[in-house]
Length: 132
Image (cartoon, rainbow, N blue to C red; front, side, top):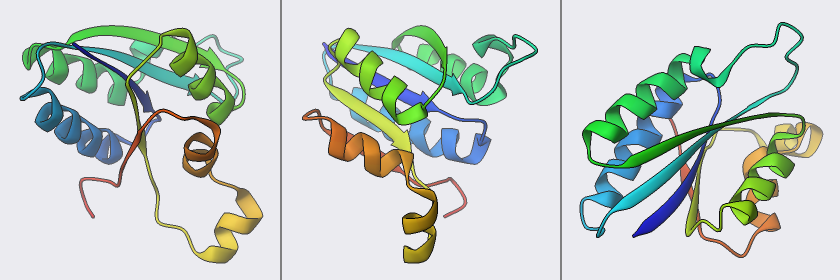
C-alpha cells in the first residue's frame, strides 16, 4: 500500500497533471491512499476544502481509479503545512505542483516546491501543469 500526500492549490491544470501522475503510479501499486491537502493562504470567509474545484476533481478521479482518498485542509505557510502533514500521516511520497519561474523569480519570491523538497527526506513528485 502506497500512501501519498497530494498538495493542491487552486490551479486546475496543475491538479490534472498531478492526477495523471498519481493514476500512473497507483496502477502498479498494491493499493493506494491519497491525502489531498489544500492550504489556504488567507481564509477569512471560512471556505472549505470541499469548495476548491481542483480538490473535488482530484478526489473524484482518484476514487474512480480505486484510490482511497481523505481530504485535508489547513491555513498558513503552504510548505510548512505540507511538511507537517507528510510527517503526521507518515506518507511514502509527496506530490506537489510546480510552476515555471525565472531564477530571479525564485530568489525574490521563494518556492513552496523548493522548500518542500529541501525540508523532507520523503520522495517528492513535482508535476507541472497539463498545458506544459
